[in-house]
Length: 295
Ligand code: MF3
Ligand code: CO
Image 1 (cartoon, protein in one colour):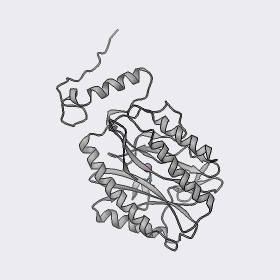
Image 2: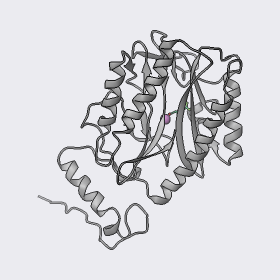
Image 3: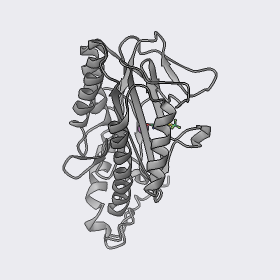
C-alpha cells in the first residue's frame, strides 16, 4: 500500500495565490478551514478561482467601466429607440474607456450587449427593427473586459408606464437578488443564496429558470462555479474569500420552462410567452462578508 503524503506548503514559501506573501500569513488558515469542510463532505472551490488582491483590483476597475455603461443606458433608454441603439451606446462607451464588450464575438455572438424584452428570458440580440415601446420591460446585460479582467452585470428598465404585474415582477426580482446577496459570506454555501431566491420567487407566485444561472467571473467571462437558483441551503460549493461570482436569477411570471430561438440559436424565451425578469450583480466574497463589484 502506498500512502501519499499530504503535500504541505513550506510555511515560509510564497503563497499559491501569487500574492508574494509567505504561505503562513496568506492562505494557510484558509486552506485549513476548507480542508476540514471537505472532510465533512462539502464541495470546496478550486484554487484557480480564488483571486488575490491585485486581481481583485483589476476586476474592480473593469467593474467601474461596466457600471458606467449601464448608468449611461439608464439615463438614455426610452420609448422609440431600437435595441440596436443600446448596442451602439454600449460599444461606444466601453471602447472609449479602453475596454472591450465581452459578448462581442463570444462563441459567435454578434453584438456587444444582450437586450431581453418582455418574454425574452436572456440573450436577446439587439436589432434595428426592434423598437422599445411604452410598457415594455427590458433587461440590458453588459459584460466588460478591461486589461484582461471581466465584469458582468445587468439591470431591468421599465419603458414609461407598465402594468402593475410587470412592475411588481421587476421589483420582486430585484428584491430576490438583494436577499440572495445577504447570504454571501465566507464559508457559507452557494445553496444558501439559491434557496432564499427560490423561496422568495415562489412566495410571489413565480418560477425560477433552472437551466441557466450565475457563474464565476473575473479572470474569465464564465468560470466555475455554476450558480443555481433552484438549489438548497447547505448544498453546492462553499463560498470562500477571494471568490467572485454573479447572482443573476431569471424569474418567470408563469412557467419556468424555456426554449431557445431555433433561428439565431441564442435568444431564450419563456415557453408560455409570459414575462421574465432578471437582475445581475457581480459579488466578491470577503473575509467578513461580501462586496458588490458591479450592478
Ligand atoms: N452576460 C451574460 C451572462 O451573464 C452572458 C451573455 S453571453 C453572450 O453570463 F454571448 F450572449 F453575451
Ligand atoms: Co453573467
